[in-house]
Figure 1 (cartoon, one colour):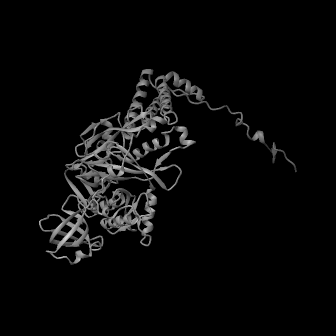
Figure 2 (cartoon, rainbow, N blue to C red):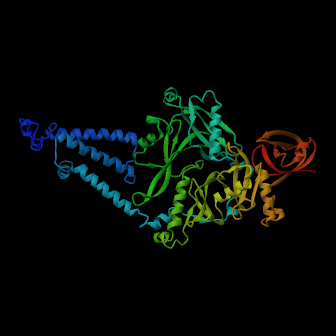
Length: 575
């Protein structure tokens, strides 16, 4: 039996749906019109009030500088324009059928925020183009002025009591271990990960601030503040917890008004800042050094530093200084210095040359380290060609306080090639090398590295000649490493015999006192001569004679000059 779609089993389809209109023919539902709120004046007040509330919350949370050279300011302003326009649409009851009608409404009813947003976008676009490296390559190349220097005369040989033995990772381990030993602090505080390297009273040290372990610890301790900071000596690897009479109340890990970023923004609403770093003055008072960032090319290009705001970490008192005091070591950070030199290396012969001819195009190497000279800290980084080879054409040293920079032409191995050489010399021990420190040893640019085991403990030291990186010397102490290195220099004809102990001094006399201690698995002997208050330290491996010395024995000691009651001996002989 056949049937059609309109007659199924005796039921007529249209009759079955009679009484209900067809879905296809149903009229579209009309939108319920929104009613405007109050009078036009009332609506403007509401719109402004909501925008102001959003502005206060946004400013408090995000802390954008009120500065046309900051991209964050444009985001802030555009968000507020959008908030006002959105409020105007809601309070007016306006409804549109398409984007064109909304656009027309915004031009008529929100003219000020609409055209302000448009002007900001145009300003940002024009400012970006004006600061483009394509158009201003010459200006970028001049961001870091520098001179060509002579390494031997500019970089003095430093004594062993000035050579930093620790890298950042090792310093962090020592700092965490020290805090863990203090039962009154370990449960309440943690160590921040800043570990800034500074020169303090003639010694290279890293300073680390504390922070509250959690919100509960913050609530119970914030009235007294953070009670101390850590000082890690980069030479003798000692860690000192410096307790304060009054606690640190302003840090980057604080909350609300005592948060350093918020404290800075409320005090200096138009300034742009680089990452603040903790330092201490010569009296040990902690300060935050907050470098002021300026843009020198177009609106957003040519990042540079112009002075800094110094904030007392205890009281919060602050002062902007274009010329910072001499105890400040960290005004220009290493990344900015390397970026500015890279602009020179890439663009000093023009933008097109950096892409096509690439004549004399150079860049900095991947890593950097610090050298303490005088009362300042210098950033060291190598300079290599863009060809991707494993050799440097030279290196730069930059004063982190003044940005005074010198380039030293010295063809040789890159830092990572030197690290590989040092690790290859001790490959049976599987030690890893720290990033090299550049030293002047016997007038030779030399990479100095600490060699660490799997537990990240320093076990040995290595020296690699920059120009001839097959010359690698190692030793269980710095003195032993240096002696082995100078012997290799002499064997390779780089030094003559009378140069190998240059920079040392000699003390002679009868032994007044001799003491011993075990350090890092080595027996170290401390020898004092009659009429001399200084102790001369030397290991048994370096001078087996020290084991059988007695008081009254006449000796001759060659040592590295320096300050302090203990100096490092290089050789020990009976007279």
